[in-house]
Image (cartoon, rainbow, N blue to C red; front, side, top):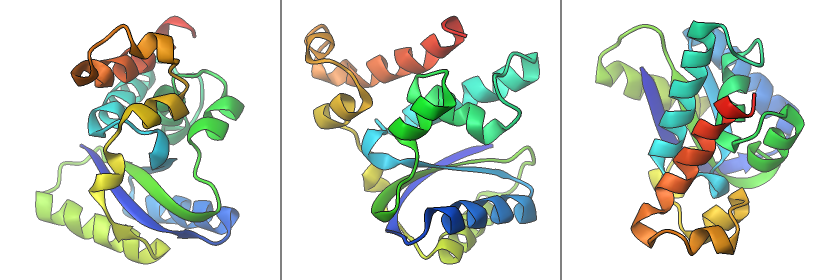
Length: 172
């Protein structure tokens, strides 16, 4: 099961925030990845990245030993961890954050909502899925050039991101 949701809050100390996510992931036996929502172009962007990361692990073609890091690489459209973190990693301060939760078990939807609530309570964030809505500026922050944006109609902008995610397999 792949869940994608957005939230707003303040990251006071990045190291503590990441430690909380890791501990929560271990307690719940799930994978949690937090990303800078200002470079996320919709839920499909992160669902595609998660599916590619899962497939890479299933096929043994992953570049990292961590599903959450592999997801970060795909979401960023880059194969270098340092660049991926710079582009999409959560930073300190008041933030809009996109979360991806991957669970190998199948739970009822209500159970997942409780997991999301516990996660947000743990880190002191409030849910706000609107932070996942991308626009032209999101694509620019992601690194898409104006020239590339002119090649497709606005209703197809999401496909540019999905292409960048898929291209990670090619540049391995």
